[in-house]
Image (cartoon, rainbow, N blue to C red):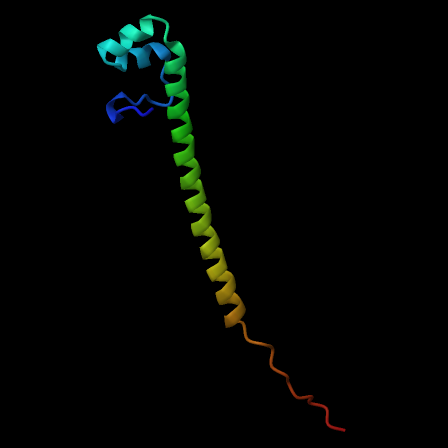
Length: 91
């Protein structure tokens, strides 16, 4: 089940606010105690929001990981080995 973008509730919407956003026939069905459907739709919306937030966090982590890899790669290739200095003492 999916809802239209205009009927998508905010993150802290109550059931009464959700009911008021529905078309008249859905409100009528809700009055007939079709609450499990509404609860299911609210859970689905919350799950979708969490999934989107999770994907955004994973993209950020991937970007940070690639930046870190680039920094580590650049630091290991740009470091020069210490030069051997000849001893000043000649015996």
